[in-house]
Image (cartoon, rainbow, N blue to C red; front, side, top):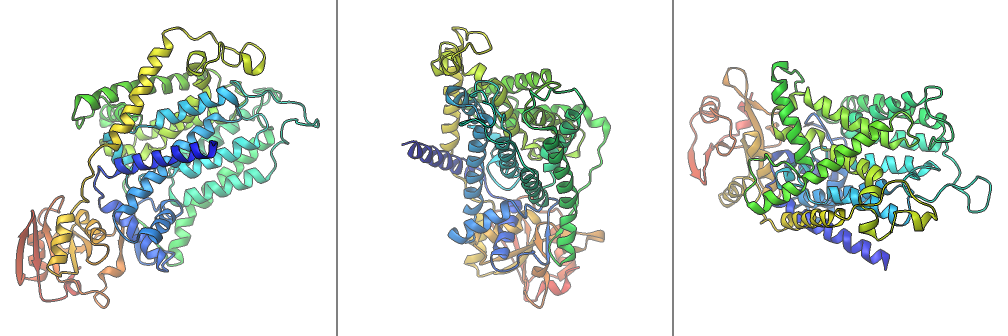
Length: 554
C-alpha cells in the first residue's frame, strides 16, 4: 500500500514538472549538453574535440542524458524529461533529508514542510529549475551525500520528535557509530560532483569544512550533545578538502588525456554596481522560492496570487536561518549549521559576482532552494505543522509519552496554513497546466530540412538548438565575429570536429534571426564572397554557397 502511494506521488510530480518544463523553449545551451551526451553514447566518452562551457556537468547531467537518449534518441524531449526527473528527485531527497531519523508525525511534519517549499516552482524560474543543466541537478548528489552522512550519525536527526537514542550494547539499542567508510564515500561523492560542477564548493565542501573546523574547538560542544564523534566530523572535513582539490584538477587531467576543454568566463566585478547586485540577489532568492512578486513576466492575477502566497515560504526560510544562527554554537547536529552557512556563503558570493547583473544569473545559486527547504524542515517542521495540522494535542506528547518542547499551536494557525498549502498545490497545478511551446528555432529547422540543407553555420543561439530540433539530420555549427570582423568557430558547447573541412561540407550561413550576432551577414559576404542564393524565411535569412565554407573559416 505504502509503495503504491509513493509510486503515485512520484508519477504525479514527474508528470507535472515535465509539463511545466515544456512551457519554456529549449535553447542552444541545453542542446549542446544533449549533443555531448549523444557523442558520449556513441563512444566519445572523454568528449574529444569538445569545448564545454565553464561547467561541464560531465558526471551529473551528461550520464543522465545518455540514459534518456538510449530510450528516446536524440531530440528536445531529452532535456524536458531529465529536468522533470531531476526536480522530482530533489523534492523527494529534500523531504527525506529533512525528516532525518524522526519518526511518526514529527518526521512527517519535517518532510512535508521541506517538500512543500519546493513543490511549485515559480513560472519565471522554470528556465532555471526545470530546463537545461543550470546547477540545479548538482544538488541531487549533494543531498545523497548528506543522506549518507546523516544516516551514519547515531543521533542524527533525533532532535524535534525522533525516538530517543537508547544505550549501546543493549538489544534494540541505537545503531553503531560512524566508521571511516563514511568519510571515504562522502569524499568520493564530493569528488564526483566537483568534476561536473565547482558550485559544490560553496554548497557543500567549504561550508562543511568551516563548520567542522569550528566545532572542533575544545569545549564548544559537549560530547553528549554531538550527533557524531569529533574525529568523524574532522575526517569528513579532510575528505571534503581532498575531494575539492582533486575535483578542481580533474578537468585538466581529462583535457591532458585528449578530452573536453572548459571555456572560462570573466569574474571581475564593478563594486559601484553593488546596490544593483543587492537588489538582483534579493529577487533571485525570491525567484527560487517561488515568491518573486517583482517579476515583470507575471502575466495574470491568478499567477500573482500564487506568487504572493509563496512569501510564506520565504518567511519560513528566514525564520529557519534565525533558528540555526541562535543554535549555531552549541548545536549537536552537523547538518543544520552546515546548510545555514552554505546559504549565507552562496548569497554573499552571488552578491559580489558578475552573475548578479540580472535574474538569469540566479542559476548560479539554484542550490539554495533544496538547502533552504531541508533547513526549514529540519528546524521548523515540528513547530509549524504541529498539533492542529497533524492531529496531536501537543506534538510529540502521545508519541514520546512526555511533553514536547514548544507552545501549543494557536487556533488561527490551522486555517492560515490550510490557505497557504492550498495555494502551493494550486501553483503546482497551474505550472503543469501551462501550454507547451515549440523549441527555439523549430521553424528554421523545418525549413532547412525541407530545402535539403544539411550542413551550415550560424550564431551560437541558432546553432545547437537547430541541430537538436532536427534530431541531427541538419548540423549547424556556431560561429562568431572575431578580431577585424573575421568569422571564426565559437568555442562554447561546440565540437571542433564539426569545423574540419575534410569531415564536413558546410554550404550555408543563417545570418539573421533571433539573437543572431549583428553584422554577421556582411561578415559572411567578406569571408565567403557573394552567395549563390539568399532566402528569407520565418524571420531568418539563409545564405547558400556552392562551396565548402569551412575551408575559408578563420
